[in-house]
Image (cartoon, rainbow, N blue to C red; front, side, top):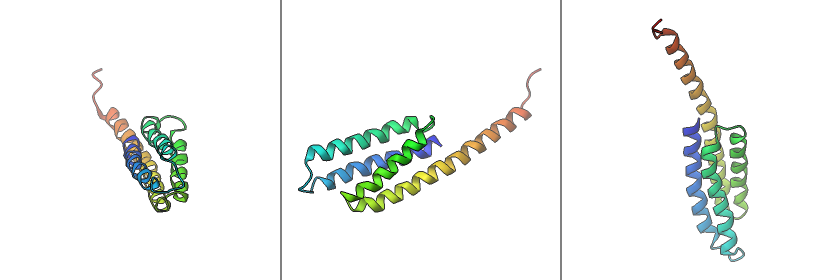
Length: 118
């Protein structure tokens, strides 16, 4: 699960950076506000790459997905991109858990069939 979720988060990192560049063109937003919010969101993406397998990591990822969709109120294309990344996040979590379960089953089968030397 960690690999799939981290890949999604790294993609989001770049999308948030590009959305910050687009948001800078809004005359109602100051550059410092745009980059403070974008920088925090980008930092959270990187932080979550390490926390995704810990308790609450997936829930924090979902919170980030909601924030990404909500950023569409500032950069309208983020409604679409946020929804795409939320779907990727769901797929990463769902299929990542299936892969982890399959790896565990395979490892358990390998332990039963391997000679123990005793």
